Image 1 (cartoon, rainbow, N blue to C red):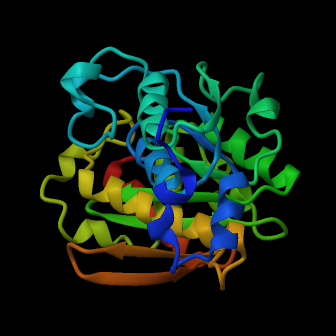
Image 2 (cartoon, rainbow, N blue to C red):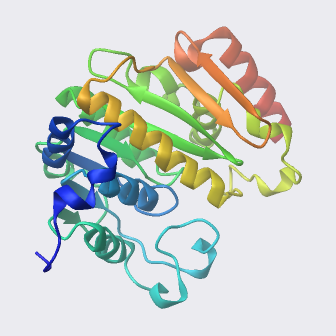
Length: 286
């Protein structure tokens, strides 16, 4: 532990919004984050500043120049460095007492059991297109009774879905296997954001290439995701008030000054969702 560090002093300004006892509860909680790029790095820093004391962190990638517009650890001094190592350094600069278990191969079928061992909550930071890994993690969370939070950066806003023990599962909501592989990005996107608020101001639709696994992103969305996800984590871990869980979610977009509370019974099987997916497929020629 670094000289002069005091957990109580470092996180004393949280007190008032949480009690002293709740802060100590957060200190003992174990949070898993899969992916430390676009949103995952910000998730880690926000939760570290909230006073979470234990993390399981997974990422296999390195920082490159294309990450500069949105990723917490992407700087000239970290080019080519492992995202996992960089973000652990940043987190420990906030709290040198952190207990961290690192998974440098990312989340895989081989390490998933260890990755989720003893975890109180999972926060999704995986790449948008990492469908196999994402399905494996959420399935394992369901089997283990671990709450899971996903906050998706869309445009300049955030769409949020929580998957809670005993509630609707990730697979039942998104139904990614109900169509061919090429449809998975579309099904995931439409499930995340039934309100589609971000589409009101997309100035260049050609930059959204779901088949090519590419799309635009912003720093505003990633930072919003961290704040919103940390709030959901706090409420779930401390049992503080109601939490919207799938098939209910919400989408906040400050660019268009809108908050949409979404509800899609049946998830992507909902008639409105099926119609929206069909229309989008035609537009994208999938």
